[in-house]
Amino acid sequence: DVKIPDEDVKNLKTVGDAADYILKHQG
Image (cartoon, rainbow, N blue to C red):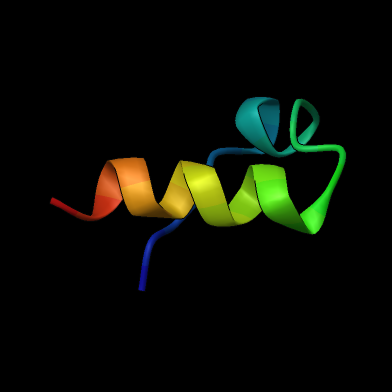
């Protein structure tokens, strides 16, 4: 699982934003 820091969560307005964040940080 990808743990998203709280300060980053505030910037993720949509599910698409969250999915994109997770994809970028999986590698």
